[in-house]
Image (cartoon, rainbow, N blue to C red; front, top):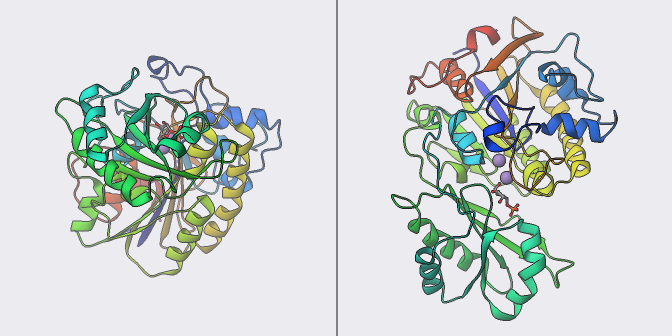
Length: 397
Ligand SMILES: O=P(O)(O)O[C@H]1O[C@H](CO)[C@@H](O)[C@H]1O
Ligand SMILES: [Mn+2]
Ligand SMILES: [Mn+2]
């Protein structure tokens, strides 16, 4: 074992620029970090991410983020090989299970065969049933739902079936039950949907509706073993923070924490860092994506990055000699791009330990996100499914 504890933090949707296949997704030109930096005209202050090589790894330096000379650790970018660009694809691929078969998407809404069953099960009429932004859909249909108790079902460019419900009209527990039922309808073979997402919200009227932290993702069961399973079976601790537990349907996780927000997530990271464990702590911070990326709000996105960066300073300071920190993302969500969907991009990769031998070097452009999990398995001498190439020797202490 090289490192006793490995911490990976996924900055959900913080893409690092165009990927070789961006065009095939209609996303050529997307660059989440580059465009947020440009929006801030040099005032995006991310000193800790910068010290780990955030600008070094980008094709050209990000505006306002100095190239670290030298960078504290190793840096690079990773390319996605999964068919989709959703969180599930990204996280599964990081853990050695790329999603090779495209999952079902519904640009024209879900077929009656699915909608009718949801209506019958819930005893509620289904409305909307088309791609929509989740904050817009409650603005447009929330007041109606408060009167009628109908279910707001919508989707996006991703393989997702989302159900929005006012917490006072459809209690959260009932919403979860409906989502669990909807899950059973789309596990294949006809339709295979990545995630059913419960989207509860509160508020008196359309100008004051807010979505709550009771969001829950009901993912497809992993279609095979992931690196998390291999680690757990080998007796290591596998701690999931944020929607990690949901994304893997609890598989391979020994302890899970639900996040209220990015800052709450970082509180959990701090708490776990203070504990003694041997294994892997996997964190997802979703606010970048849900609150700013899909909302095409570059200002909020940059602010969230700066808030994270402040907390990162504490994490770096608290790392023990045998801790390894990895920072990456699951896809892009360029807040300056057209539409409101995720963007196919390369993702950043930063690796740092206070004791790593070699520093200030590039890990290059990794051919798959699975290199991350392969490195973690290699660190713990655990055999996996052979997907991905470990870069442990390069970052060893
Ligand atoms: O618009 P909201 O509800 O945030 O939904 C977004 O969140 C989903 C998961 O990231 C995406 O597929 C997109 O639909
Ligand atoms: Mn995501
Ligand atoms: Mn998203």
